[in-house]
Length: 68
Image (cartoon, one colour):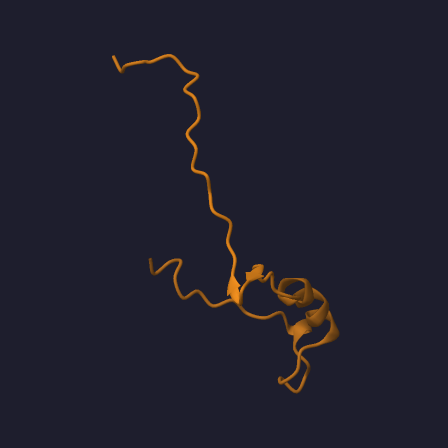
């Protein structure tokens, strides 16, 4: 767990301005597709509407088998 958890990823130097407080245009171009918008669920009567699943079983198509 220690090998994969809390790993530190450094921001490329080209993404931070020399003052250290603002991102550059290159960083904005890279990050924008990752942060642009959010896919909200549809609403019905003021509450999020999620479709109900049918949960229908498929007809078995394979022959019965056993482990030898």
